[in-house]
Length: 478
Image (cartoon, rainbow, N blue to C red; front, side):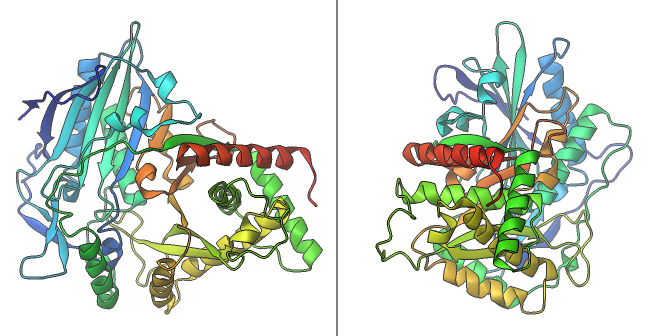
């Protein structure tokens, strides 16, 4: 049942109503009974992390009736939740257990669907790559209601004199599912809303696919309780943070230039060339710029005086999809978390060095080695991850972490009114991560990176990134 709301954020933003959208059981299908799905240790990794907040910005056509669009969104969400019913449930402590959690679905459970309007901004302004305040996009992010909800949706109509645009916000608790699963849900919802003749394959809901590690689960669950003891009771409130959000595009030509330079350094040193994919090349240049931005306006090669931080190690953490690598193999459409961390370690001074070819070689070598370790997923992989996770807590500087993947194809999500003009992972302003996605410039072969930093640090990052793009496009490998 829809309930009106008087919530507002500024004169131009207003929440109109919030409804609960439950799975629909039509066409003779029997409603599901109560079901509890225990979390695995792979889910427990994300118990205390902030929810993933994604906003899809779309331009509506002149023939698109806004009320009809909102109705189709709600109706198709209800139909899709039949297959993705765990996302309509809630996260809770397993009864009788002190440190075990589960997703519980009960008949009548549903997803909060908020409808809002904003009269002070349009998609063209929001879809810019230039830095803008987190507060400018925070209103479009839905909150997770209290009680352990794992999914919330908000459709904000952007009121313009001549047309209407739409900001569709989706918030997902990471303990419920990983990026592959959440974007599988998005693609399925969009295809259903658009009336596609062929829908994506349904999810596989079977937590016994994962061979659990109780020792790791115990460690992660205790860490979650220590960091957020009331994480399931409170509403997750969207609060604007003092950071700027910006998007940086790395073209296909630039990625090839990075690969060529890394191969040239390897040849010069007489060592094997690291396996430098486009994603490794992207991570390498972003790690270089991020590290330089964090250290300030210091030229690390201009000053040869030993520094107390010369031995300071930097860390980049990304996630690898382990579905095809687990034993037994996990289905591609498994709904839940099936990712493993990749820890790339290198001396911060080497990553930030102004001799950029060598810096990129160091960064890419470390990243390729870390990804290879996760890809092989050997017997001691999780023990090594536990050790490195503990070591990460002792670092002087926070690691650079990565959210998203070009494989998620977020720019192919089409609800029937066109593919999004821009997709933002807004939660990076809270987590400190960078987000990655395929380039929205069709056919470029590039990757776009979302970055959230305080203003001064963002300006340093922009300068460093601009310099890197300039020398990558204008000079030959050293």
